[in-house]
Image (cartoon, rainbow, N blue to C red; front, side, top):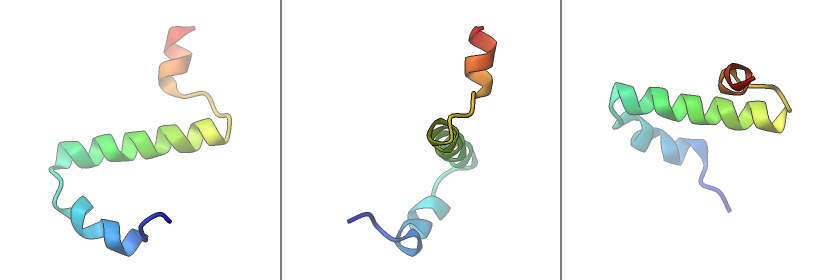
Length: 46
């Protein structure tokens, strides 16, 4: 079972700003992949 968001928030809050941006990028990339949306990186490779 995956941890609840409320369990993850303290660990996320402890991240540096740069790591928070990387986390957001990873989450958005996963969402885009699940929704079959091309990411900027994929478009740049074309």
